[in-house]
Image (cartoon, rainbow, N blue to C red):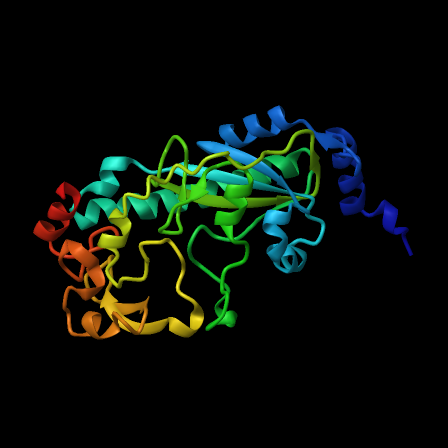
Length: 282
C-alpha cells in the first residue's frame, strides 16, 4: 500500500505551504500591514482587539465555540451614505441598509481570504445582521456581538440608543468582526470620549418607547412584546417596550413617542412620508 505522504493531494498541500511560506505560530503580525489589508478589502475603518481584553470577556464562550484558536479580533466599519438613510423614501433607505449589510459581510470574507492566502487562519465572526443561528430561537441567536468589539477597538462609543457612534461617520455605519489565529504588533484602544451629544432625538423617534431618556436599557422583567410597524414594509411586527407604554403602543396612541408626536416613527421608513419628513425637520 502506498505511503500517505506520496498521495498527490498530500504532496500538493506541502508544496503549496512551502511556496507561500507558512506563518509560524508565534509570529506577530504587523498592525500597519494588517490595517492596510483590511482597508484594501473595502473597510472604511478597522481596529484590533486582543482576545483577553476585559471589555469583551463576556464573549469568551462564543469565541471558544466558533473558533477556539482566536487570538485577535478585527473589528470592521463600513459606512452608509448619510442622505440615503435620512430620506423619508423607504425604498432608498432600505436599499442602502441592505447594500451596506452585504458589503460589510463581503469585506469580512475578503479579509479572511487574504489572510488564508498567507497561511493565517481566520473566520468571519458572524453576519452583520442575518442570517443568525436559528436553532437558538428565543435566546442569543447571533455569534459575536459586533458592538462591544467595535467599542474596544476604538471605533466609537455607544450612544443612549445603544448603537455605536463612529467619531467620523457618526451613526451611519455597519459593523463586522473577523477572528484571527495570530497576535498583532499593536492593538487598538477605546476612544476617550463619547461622540453622542445626548440630544434625545432617538428617544423621541423610537416607535415603541424602548429608549429611556437616561440611556439605561430596560431590565428583562420590564420588557414586553407588542405589535409595532415593520420599518421594511410598513406591516406589523414585534417590538419590545415597557409595560408602562405598552397600552399606548397597542392602540396606536402617541405615548411611546414621548414629546414628538406619533407612534410609528423610528428607523428607515417608519411612519408616513409626511410624518418621517417632519421628524427630520423637528
